[in-house]
Length: 463
Image (cartoon, rainbow, N blue to C red; front, side, top):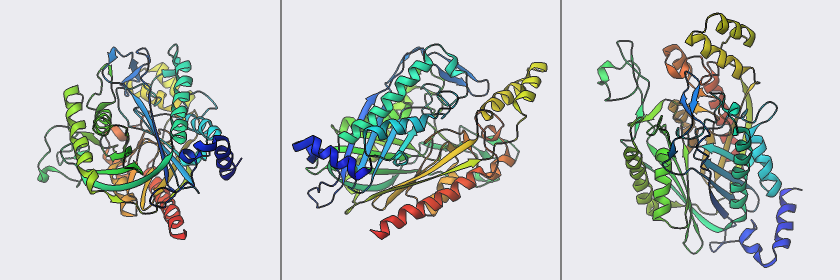
């Protein structure tokens, strides 16, 4: 069944309720934009493990819940095309999570497409990258924990149900967009020093001690959706900083993205607020592994900035939506074949050999398939990438027309360092299950993003 047939059948079946759910219904401004949003609690049982060390490949059970985790979905439908954004309080999702021959993102999309008129590639599935969440990025023997496979199946169903609910919640709506700069939250974590060392946290070194210039992307991008009567409906935020304030704390927490979304939803009753992270692979928060007071403080800073900017956002006039995706197969970084890595680790179980063995196991799971996805509503567009892109990639894509960039989307392939970073060294480029792709991969993804942007932007010009 194609999209038009699905909508027509749904309208007939819904009878007098079709007004709220069918994409071609004009709103008070004469446009056909309908918007739906939904929110679902996805806090796991305490026995579902969280990551305690990527280097050692270890995890542990939670000891409590500080704040709940949520999946939030947003659907935009202009009557001709529709897109969906699913943002989850999660560290990320390795597509091999479900086991051999299965793909987490693909199965999620199929479940949604079976119950809506959304095309599978019109669904963006992003994680906030909060670290006090289940270890779903494939760095530990996560699936071997008793009960985890069943929990994953349930979790997958909950995520799909959130998007389906947002689809069914569509109402005529209006949209506004804008950006504001928020300083004092992010910290570049790969500052190269003249003494050969790297500055990752703490006070910034003086400029004369730095060898390679660096900068932060401190833009807070905002999309705001209201019902035709002005009632709050949804807010989509994008900011660039690793949510590691609550890292290594044994309580479940959505970290600062959870604090900012909760604040916006509290101040705008009826709103579903989605948070997406940017190209934060080499950008931390200023505070790392500290306490929940800092989580709330950072969230409040972003929340106040977002709420204060709402009245200044520019209306999107007669906005249409579009999407385009492409898939690349990235080259893996150099690593011994699995059999050789197993033999080396058995003969000499050094930390290095154990790390290489875990990398070899990940690479043996299959090719490194990377989806680059673009979406657009009116003049606002974004690119999503499947891992932890560096901020320089974000700046490059913005320079070629992206309004913002979403990382940790549609899968997780580890860090996506720019080419020069491999020569500089450091954690993000060290061979390991967290750093799987070969040099040049980020540049390939960037080029694909530029091509996808041209496609979605040209679709706007043809209308």
